[in-house]
Image (cartoon, rainbow, N blue to C red; front, side, top):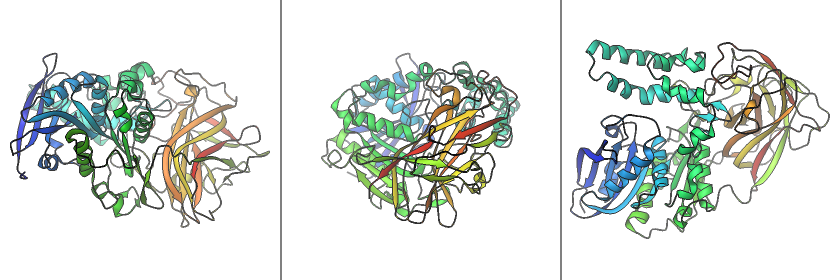
Length: 584
């Protein structure tokens, strides 16, 4: 076949309720029948033809009808925009419409990243007969674990950024479509102002129930669901894939990044379906690829670390790119080409430190040795200059560590699994400026005499007390280089009132409680001469909203209370980080 393609713009697909959604279609110029590769996006079909995730032109040249569709209420599609709500039925209807396009062979695959990954999963839950495979990149399993909440705390940095930067402009243009030009310009100017001031002022807006950056641009509804139903499993369930695994009957190629805001969801979706949680044998045929990437950064340089040229998504392991992986996945499931995708190892991980790709048979790795590393100190672990240490030895009779958590002076977000205002860059960033603070406890191992690999889920078991009726505890695992550079690997937060699950339970000030902080996962070789480090504190702002320590209902507080936090590490309270050690 030739490399020539045809492009059709604004092709209409009519949903079951009569709403018309618009799509651009790229197809081979040669006559014949071809499978369909479908992407449903809220970010504008006219902007998504060529991306690090997939090149629509290349895929059309390879013998696919590529369909890029605006979601309901977005850009050129009709209907009202309401995040998540219509993607299931609209996904079903669009898959079946795409299967009947002229030249289609009836087999449809879906692809795309983030929200566009969610549109695939939720369409698969609806079980359209012609959907044969999906390629979800950097997307979630539980809506309360990454995209909106984490450990009971609101992902404020992400929520505000997404609503203003990714969603706001199209909404403003639609609302003012028939307005006089001065009114239209004023509305857009207000939005731009709030985007520009988000980092310096907007994130600090209180109370959260009246969050000013969204209120001023008429996006109050975006915060309403959080303030009315904080950390609600019932509200999140319809849009959380893990609640519907038994309805998934198609194979998925899951792609994620160690520094992605939705890393845990990618890992969770793969592991659950691989172990048979889906509704058909095909669902267990899924695959996993995890690079050192952030949510929007797929180069070899992420944050302040260069992982080597082979780490880039543009040339994975110097062999292929994400478009090539998508084509190969679809070639098997949509064209029936025997190319080995179901017989190869199902997992490919990028191992930081060694900076190499490695194939594995499962996730988590069966050979993992979960090993506790205990925190110790002489009662003064504050700052990187303190006396906090980290060892495999159980603590004895040791003094506790204390710090003052003042929500008015929170620990600032510095790198990590974030998607926020562009000045908050994601990925690994030297943590030493953060570790100079008195409200950060730092526990560091001795220099390693041999390489040590940590690959898998990481969590901290913490015994602590607080003077507040509610508070937060934040933990971070880092790799300390011989020259002092501190590479953050993974972190997590627990809102104390959610320490026992979905329903809030306030603290009794001064009473000791056990907390579990899930740091998600990583893969890193701590090289000889490097040191392991655990940081403990009570904030990471504006990534996560500040806990005012009062115990008041979510979003009500306009003022804060400073509290003393006490971290215990003794015989009866062996606070530690549980590391997934891989024998080498």
